[in-house]
Length: 104
Image (tube, rainbow, N blue to C red):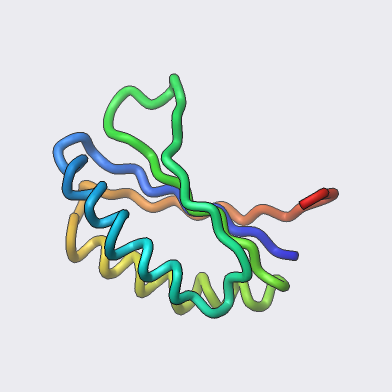
């Protein structure tokens, strides 16, 4: 199992547009991913966020190779689409999670 966390930080000025994009476009892109076995798309609730909001996509892959393929191909495409739509109003952070132990 190989895990990837992607956080999308959005400014407040695009909040409504992002919610619609998330519900329609991004969700559909995620549903069509072949390499990801499972995913969780979440709104992040945190006292540490004072401006805008964060959305997190947790992706589970069969192995590191599939995760890396996703990062190099699919994440690049998703990032380009989001930047084209929202420009600098969305920042995208990827975090590689390497489980030591799990009960999933």
